[in-house]
Structures are given as structure tokens and as C-alpha cells.
Length: 205
Ligand code: ADP
Ligand code: RBF
Ligand code: MG
Image 1 (cartoon, rainbow, N blue to C red):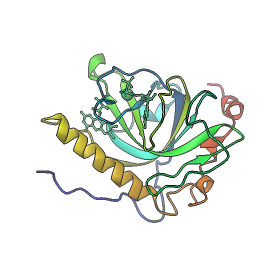
Image 2: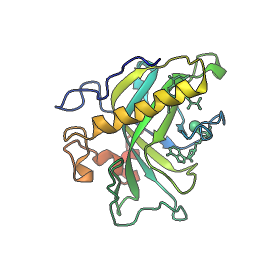
Image 3: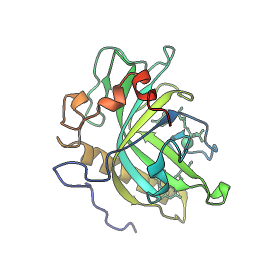
Image 4: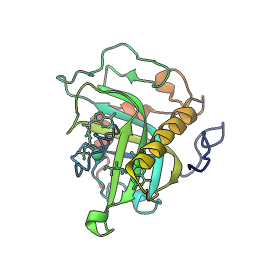
């Protein structure tokens, strides 16, 4: 029996410190533990404490926010100048930088396979894609924390909780102070998500 969980996270006034947190990288292969077979593919991002110092300090668990992707020209979901604004997702296509924005849920957790020394960061984008996008540039703007990681007796219980995470993310992001200005539906500053790449890389560490 599932424990009752809040269906919306955070105050109507918008994300609170330390959020939003940023992270970016090229989508890498995970461990092929079959998240796609669960119907929940996760785009894995490399975790590097030097590039993303905050990641060493945050707790393991499920986060939500916005992700942007720059898909290659050959990808079926390559942005056009149109906006796709269905009830469940908000997608904005930025013709200039080539980044499209989507709502997301993600898991940040210690990776059992590396004896708890390395974090894994996996983003489930709340959008149906026509093809994989390994190697694509992804940026993530985390705006809040949903829950801590749990152990599950079976896969169905995990899937059920992740589906609920997706609902919580959608509900929470579907408020003015949590929705992106770039989607035309909110006031949250998402300019970093759709910025041209060179600007960002000028800060060398
Ligand atoms: P891996 O173990 O390699 O991460 P997954 O089964 O988690 O494999 O699948 C992840 C891949 O699926 C992503 O890298 C991406 O290319 C693709 N993908 C397709 N749709 C989505 C989506 N909605 N969210 C995240 N990744 C997706
Ligand atoms: N794995 C867990 O063992 N416990 C969890 O609570 C858990 N929560 C997740 C929440 C989200 C939103 C996502 C995308 C994944 C979660 N996972 C969790 C990780 C999941 O097991 C992982 O995607 C697969 O193991 C494939 O890498
Ligand atoms: Mg994955």
C-alpha cells in the first residue's frame, strides 16, 4: 500500500534557495539496467564535482525542474519554430541556439557499482521522443526536491512511485513562478537553458 505523498512541491512564490541548481553535459550511456523497458528512459549525464561542485553536497533522491536539449539535425524531434503546448508538457523551441526545453524529473544517487564514491545523475524528460539522443548536449535547471531514494520490493512499486514523481513535477511546474518565461507561461528565468553554447564556456575552471 502506497503512503500518501504530496502532489505538489514548494510555495506558489517559486523555487527557494539553494534552487535553482544548474548542471550540463553530453548524454552518456548508463548501465543499461533497462529503464527503457520500464517505460522510463533516463538520459545519464556525467557527474564531475569540479564542474558541478554543489552535487557533492546534495542528498540522494528525486529532483524536478526543466531540461534543455540540443538535438542533432537528423533527430526526428529536431526543433522547428513552432511550440508544442500539450496539457502534459510544455516545449519551447529556440530557433537561435537550437535548444528545446522540457519538464523533467531526475534521480541523483550514489552509484552502487562504484562503491558509493560516484554519483549518478539520470534525467527522465517528460516528453515522448521519436529516437534516442545519446551524445546530445543537455542542460538541467533543478528547481526542487521531491523525495529521498527508496528501496523497493519489486519493480512495479518503483514504477508506480516514478509515475507519481512525474505527476508531482508536472503539477509543481505548472504554476506561474515555476514555469519558464521562455515558454510564455511563467516568470522563472530559463535563459541559461537556451543560451548559445559559447557564452557559457567562457568561464574556465
Ligand atoms: P542508459 O542506461 O544508456 O541510460 P536508458 O534505458 O536509461 O539507457 O535509456 C536512456 C536513453 O533513452 C537516453 O540516453 C536517450 O537517448 C533516450 N530517451 C528517449 N526518450 C527519453 C526521455 N523521455 N527521457 C530520457 N531519455 C530518453
Ligand atoms: N531507484 C531506486 O532504487 N529508488 C528510487 O527511489 C528511485 N527513484 C527514481 C526516480 C526517478 C524519477 C528516476 C528517473 C529514477 C529513479 N530510480 C530509483 C532509479 C531507477 O532505478 C533507474 O532509472 C534504473 O535503475 C535505471 O538506471
Ligand atoms: Mg539511463
